[in-house]
Amino acid sequence: MDGLATLMPLASLLLEATLETIVMVVASTAMASVIGVALGIVLVLTHRDGVVPRPLVHRVVGALVNVGRSVPFVILMVAIIPFTRFVTGTSIGTRAAIVPLVVAAIPYVARVAHAALEEVPRGLVDAIVAMGATPLQVVREAYLREARPALARGLTLTAISLVGYSAMAGAIGGGGLGDLAVRYGYQRFRTDVMVATVVVLVVLVQALQATGERLARRLDHR
Image 1 (cartoon, helix red, strand yellow):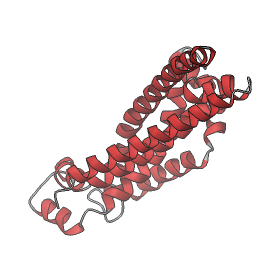
Image 2: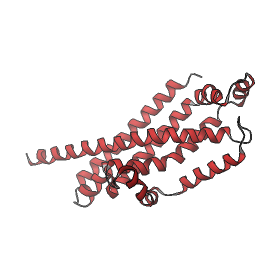
Image 3: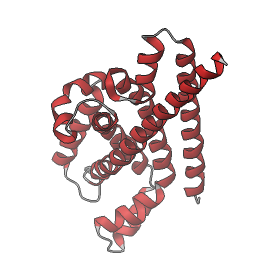
Image 4: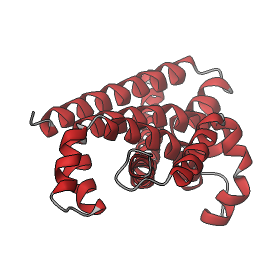
Protein backbone atom coordinates (compact mmCIF):
# COMPACT_ATOMS: atom_id res chain seq x y z
CA MET A 1 0.00 0.00 0.00
CA ASP A 2 2.85 2.40 0.81
CA GLY A 3 4.30 1.89 -2.65
CA LEU A 4 0.93 2.57 -4.27
CA ALA A 5 0.49 5.70 -2.16
CA THR A 6 3.88 6.92 -3.31
CA LEU A 7 3.17 6.20 -6.97
CA MET A 8 -0.14 8.07 -7.00
CA PRO A 9 1.29 11.50 -5.97
CA LEU A 10 4.22 10.94 -8.33
CA ALA A 11 1.85 10.23 -11.22
CA SER A 12 -0.11 13.37 -10.39
CA LEU A 13 3.05 15.48 -10.24
CA LEU A 14 4.31 14.00 -13.50
CA LEU A 15 1.04 14.67 -15.27
CA GLU A 16 0.92 18.29 -14.15
CA ALA A 17 4.58 18.90 -15.02
CA THR A 18 4.22 17.18 -18.40
CA LEU A 19 1.21 19.32 -19.31
CA GLU A 20 3.16 22.46 -18.33
CA THR A 21 6.07 21.39 -20.52
CA ILE A 22 3.77 20.65 -23.46
CA VAL A 23 2.15 24.08 -23.10
CA MET A 24 5.55 25.77 -23.04
CA VAL A 25 6.85 23.86 -26.06
CA VAL A 26 3.71 24.17 -28.19
CA ALA A 27 3.17 27.87 -27.46
CA SER A 28 6.80 28.87 -27.94
CA THR A 29 7.18 26.78 -31.10
CA ALA A 30 4.06 28.31 -32.63
CA MET A 31 5.05 31.91 -31.87
CA ALA A 32 8.70 31.44 -32.81
CA SER A 33 7.69 29.72 -36.06
CA VAL A 34 5.62 32.68 -37.25
CA ILE A 35 8.35 35.24 -36.56
CA GLY A 36 11.28 32.99 -37.48
CA VAL A 37 9.83 31.87 -40.82
CA ALA A 38 9.08 35.52 -41.65
CA LEU A 39 12.72 36.41 -40.96
CA GLY A 40 13.86 33.46 -43.08
CA ILE A 41 11.71 34.73 -45.94
CA VAL A 42 13.25 38.19 -45.57
CA LEU A 43 16.74 36.68 -45.70
CA VAL A 44 15.96 34.79 -48.90
CA LEU A 45 14.16 37.64 -50.67
CA THR A 46 16.73 40.33 -49.81
CA HIS A 47 19.80 38.35 -50.82
CA ARG A 48 21.74 39.94 -53.67
CA ASP A 49 20.35 37.20 -55.96
CA GLY A 50 16.91 37.31 -54.38
CA VAL A 51 13.59 38.47 -55.73
CA VAL A 52 13.87 41.77 -53.83
CA PRO A 53 17.64 42.32 -53.46
CA ARG A 54 18.43 44.51 -50.46
CA PRO A 55 22.00 43.68 -49.36
CA LEU A 56 21.92 46.06 -46.38
CA VAL A 57 18.68 44.62 -45.04
CA HIS A 58 20.02 41.10 -45.60
CA ARG A 59 23.21 41.84 -43.66
CA VAL A 60 21.41 43.53 -40.76
CA VAL A 61 18.81 40.79 -40.36
CA GLY A 62 21.47 38.10 -40.75
CA ALA A 63 23.64 39.74 -38.10
CA LEU A 64 20.72 39.97 -35.65
CA VAL A 65 19.87 36.33 -36.22
CA ASN A 66 23.49 35.28 -35.66
CA VAL A 67 23.73 37.30 -32.45
CA GLY A 68 20.53 35.71 -31.18
CA ARG A 69 21.88 32.24 -31.86
CA SER A 70 25.14 33.01 -30.09
CA VAL A 71 23.67 33.69 -26.65
CA PRO A 72 23.35 30.58 -24.43
CA PHE A 73 19.79 30.00 -23.32
CA VAL A 74 20.49 30.19 -19.58
CA ILE A 75 22.18 33.57 -19.97
CA LEU A 76 19.43 34.82 -22.29
CA MET A 77 16.75 33.76 -19.85
CA VAL A 78 18.33 35.72 -17.01
CA ALA A 79 19.24 38.73 -19.18
CA ILE A 80 15.68 39.35 -20.36
CA ILE A 81 13.97 38.94 -16.99
CA PRO A 82 12.85 42.63 -17.03
CA PHE A 83 11.32 42.11 -20.48
CA THR A 84 9.68 38.87 -19.36
CA ARG A 85 8.22 40.62 -16.31
CA PHE A 86 6.99 43.47 -18.52
CA VAL A 87 5.24 41.08 -20.93
CA THR A 88 3.76 38.59 -18.47
CA GLY A 89 3.77 40.45 -15.16
CA THR A 90 6.00 37.82 -13.57
CA SER A 91 9.40 36.19 -14.06
CA ILE A 92 8.55 32.72 -12.76
CA GLY A 93 6.11 30.05 -13.82
CA THR A 94 5.08 28.46 -17.09
CA ARG A 95 3.72 31.64 -18.66
CA ALA A 96 6.92 33.56 -17.93
CA ALA A 97 9.10 30.73 -19.29
CA ILE A 98 7.44 30.99 -22.70
CA VAL A 99 8.95 34.44 -23.31
CA PRO A 100 12.65 33.44 -23.25
CA LEU A 101 11.80 30.22 -25.09
CA VAL A 102 10.29 32.23 -27.94
CA VAL A 103 13.18 34.70 -28.00
CA ALA A 104 15.72 31.85 -28.06
CA ALA A 105 13.87 29.91 -30.77
CA ILE A 106 13.27 32.77 -33.22
CA PRO A 107 16.85 33.00 -34.59
CA TYR A 108 17.07 29.21 -34.77
CA VAL A 109 13.83 29.00 -36.76
CA ALA A 110 15.00 31.87 -38.99
CA ARG A 111 18.12 29.96 -40.01
CA VAL A 112 16.20 26.71 -40.42
CA ALA A 113 13.64 28.47 -42.63
CA HIS A 114 16.38 30.25 -44.59
CA ALA A 115 18.11 26.94 -45.34
CA ALA A 116 14.82 25.25 -46.28
CA LEU A 117 13.75 28.07 -48.60
CA GLU A 118 17.14 28.16 -50.32
CA GLU A 119 16.61 24.54 -51.36
CA VAL A 120 13.72 25.57 -53.61
CA PRO A 121 14.87 25.23 -57.26
CA ARG A 122 15.94 28.59 -58.63
CA GLY A 123 14.39 27.73 -61.99
CA LEU A 124 10.96 27.46 -60.42
CA VAL A 125 11.33 30.84 -58.75
CA ASP A 126 12.54 32.46 -61.97
CA ALA A 127 9.64 30.96 -63.91
CA ILE A 128 7.07 32.38 -61.50
CA VAL A 129 8.78 35.79 -61.52
CA ALA A 130 8.79 35.75 -65.35
CA MET A 131 5.03 35.22 -65.26
CA GLY A 132 4.68 38.57 -63.48
CA ALA A 133 4.16 37.29 -59.94
CA THR A 134 4.57 39.70 -57.05
CA PRO A 135 7.10 38.91 -54.29
CA LEU A 136 4.24 37.80 -52.06
CA GLN A 137 3.00 35.41 -54.75
CA VAL A 138 6.53 34.07 -55.22
CA VAL A 139 6.75 33.38 -51.49
CA ARG A 140 3.37 31.66 -51.40
CA GLU A 141 3.45 29.72 -54.66
CA ALA A 142 7.14 28.81 -54.85
CA TYR A 143 9.06 29.11 -51.61
CA LEU A 144 6.50 28.04 -49.02
CA ARG A 145 4.80 25.45 -51.21
CA GLU A 146 8.01 23.68 -52.20
CA ALA A 147 9.79 24.02 -48.85
CA ARG A 148 6.97 22.60 -46.71
CA PRO A 149 8.62 19.20 -46.00
CA ALA A 150 11.95 20.81 -45.07
CA LEU A 151 10.17 23.40 -42.93
CA ALA A 152 8.22 20.67 -41.14
CA ARG A 153 11.42 18.81 -40.32
CA GLY A 154 13.15 22.01 -39.22
CA LEU A 155 10.30 23.03 -36.96
CA THR A 156 10.28 19.53 -35.49
CA LEU A 157 13.93 19.95 -34.55
CA THR A 158 13.06 23.33 -33.04
CA ALA A 159 10.31 21.81 -30.90
CA ILE A 160 12.67 19.06 -29.73
CA SER A 161 15.29 21.64 -28.79
CA LEU A 162 12.65 23.59 -26.89
CA VAL A 163 11.86 20.50 -24.82
CA GLY A 164 15.43 20.68 -23.52
CA TYR A 165 15.26 24.44 -23.09
CA SER A 166 11.99 24.13 -21.17
CA ALA A 167 13.70 21.75 -18.75
CA MET A 168 16.42 24.36 -18.17
CA ALA A 169 13.76 27.01 -17.67
CA GLY A 170 12.04 24.78 -15.14
CA ALA A 171 15.28 24.42 -13.22
CA ILE A 172 15.15 28.12 -12.30
CA GLY A 173 11.45 28.47 -11.63
CA GLY A 174 9.84 28.02 -15.03
CA GLY A 175 7.69 25.06 -14.06
CA GLY A 176 7.35 21.84 -16.04
CA LEU A 177 9.47 18.72 -15.92
CA GLY A 178 12.70 20.60 -15.19
CA ASP A 179 11.18 22.14 -12.08
CA LEU A 180 9.87 18.74 -10.99
CA ALA A 181 13.26 17.09 -11.48
CA VAL A 182 15.08 19.75 -9.45
CA ARG A 183 12.61 20.29 -6.59
CA TYR A 184 11.40 16.74 -6.06
CA GLY A 185 14.18 14.67 -7.62
CA TYR A 186 17.47 16.44 -6.91
CA GLN A 187 16.72 18.47 -3.77
CA ARG A 188 14.76 15.67 -2.06
CA PHE A 189 17.03 12.87 -3.30
CA ARG A 190 14.16 11.09 -5.08
CA THR A 191 15.77 8.85 -7.68
CA ASP A 192 12.35 7.63 -8.82
CA VAL A 193 11.32 11.19 -9.71
CA MET A 194 14.52 11.77 -11.67
CA VAL A 195 14.12 8.52 -13.60
CA ALA A 196 10.43 9.15 -14.30
CA THR A 197 11.19 12.68 -15.54
CA VAL A 198 13.87 11.43 -17.92
CA VAL A 199 11.53 8.73 -19.26
CA VAL A 200 8.76 11.27 -19.92
CA LEU A 201 11.20 13.63 -21.67
CA VAL A 202 12.42 10.79 -23.90
CA VAL A 203 8.84 9.84 -24.75
CA LEU A 204 8.01 13.48 -25.59
CA VAL A 205 11.01 13.81 -27.88
CA GLN A 206 10.24 10.52 -29.64
CA ALA A 207 6.61 11.54 -30.11
CA LEU A 208 7.62 14.91 -31.58
CA GLN A 209 10.14 13.29 -33.92
CA ALA A 210 7.65 10.71 -35.17
CA THR A 211 4.92 13.33 -35.64
CA GLY A 212 7.25 15.66 -37.50
CA GLU A 213 8.50 12.97 -39.85
CA ARG A 214 4.96 11.82 -40.59
CA LEU A 215 3.89 15.39 -41.34
CA ALA A 216 6.92 15.99 -43.57
CA ARG A 217 6.20 12.85 -45.59
CA ARG A 218 2.57 13.87 -46.00
CA LEU A 219 3.58 17.34 -47.25
CA ASP A 220 6.16 15.97 -49.69
CA HIS A 221 4.38 15.45 -53.02
CA ARG A 222 7.51 15.06 -55.12
